[in-house]
Image: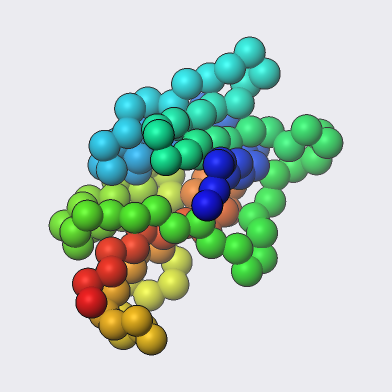
Length: 126
């Protein structure tokens, strides 16, 4: 459904280190920086990227926005969350764990990246 997602970053190097760490726990290699200073993590299913805003204004989080990454199991989700906390992210929402949803049980873990963007991992258990 999606071709790519790009989020704003104020400090590209700090944000790249953060995303290299958390996306590394999901099996992705380090991000690739292009000639414009944007960073991309790519695979056959799509692209995730960071960039300083092109309008020159500071990057800010989208109020009400969340970007979710799929994880294969709860252990990977816990590693993702720990990697994020140790590389400049901050915890938000409830602690990582199981939740009930309309579609059954799910595992969720939430973080805010160095620019304040809210991200999470999800594993649908039922």
